[in-house]
Picture 1 (spheres, rainbow, N blue to C red):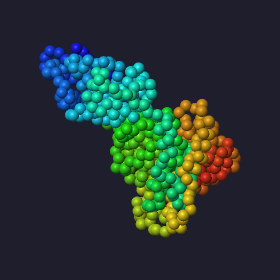
Picture 2: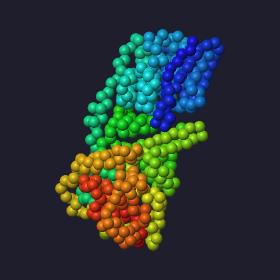
Picture 3: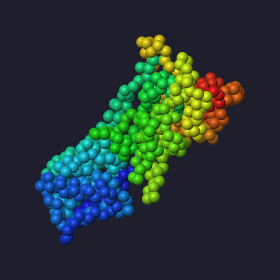
Picture 4: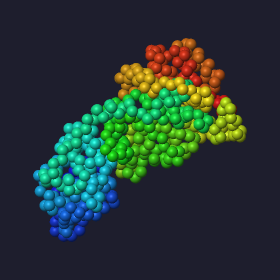
Length: 513
């Protein structure tokens, strides 16, 4: 007798339906075909132990398991549950009051029949609804994540026996229903860190507000202990709230990577990823023999913070150049190519020199001649070209630290950022894939960032006197457009340009002496 169930394989952030066909017939042996990896083939032992635990029989006949389509590689242990149910159906131990073919079934079995959580549940649920399945049977720990998707029954099961009872009609399991919108909107504004707890550093807060308002990449240069990391961690609290489509896309990536945790639902806050400087190329941009999203994709719609930027390997930093430009990562393998979204804000920090005290107001730099420039040269020109704001961070004085005066809260800053983003949304409503000033192409900069004669004179003087490089020109115009948006101005004024010019520290030819 042939039994069929349906599972799924996730590639990139999308799912493909997999048909699990099982026949039990004359002969002996267990045969699995359909390009399964070792984790899938090992399911024989887990399935047999689980069936015996609940006093069911593993047939002592020839069992053939086919995973179709056969040209797609299947990985992981999530096929245990559909294989077990198909074997029971084929050996006539399962009469099935409910038809197995109406449901997508996924789950890893432990030896005592308890179901363990799996990865990639959200894209599977989306594909199952698209394909017209009645429901999705899965481990209880993944059910809240799948319940984000409406118009499909999400059936949470704890054990193999629960799944059998559900299909036999002897156990009633109500579909899980989650009020996604209520959960999403109630947790949107909950942040652990707030700018009101930061004393001083008003110029840095202003620069980060501009960065958030225009989606600009920024780098902070300053001595150890000046507050660079503390300020960076507070950036998500001033970014505009995630929209539902953004939240869904972000959640899919985290689901595929297995980063959501137990009983998780929609990601409601913008991601903040801060990888260690020892990270590898593949871990940052994604990869592996079976491609998985990297840190830049996990930071999609949020912030990627690279602390101590010159300490990262040169090759690691260089692989970021294309994703920063294209806002996506394409990973190609011999048999497949997958694409992960990577629309993130890059925030970096660094010391000005190896000892950390170059340009310090009180402490003396002990680095030798040429060492400062050599340290800065660890960051390539093409990467620096993609960073719009260079901000010098100076240590906070004792009076500022001891002050009891409350600073401006993240919510107040966020309100201004949201208004600036609304102006950009209106400006780019007819432009495909352009949402913020930082995304403007050189042609759009010429069209949108028009400056008058006084502004041109100021920019020419700045480039001559400060030794600004030619690549700083477009960046200054983009940042000045964002400053004008924050001020509610239709035109870019001289004061907006003047403020943007001061955020190009590393472009000055004499910065490192």
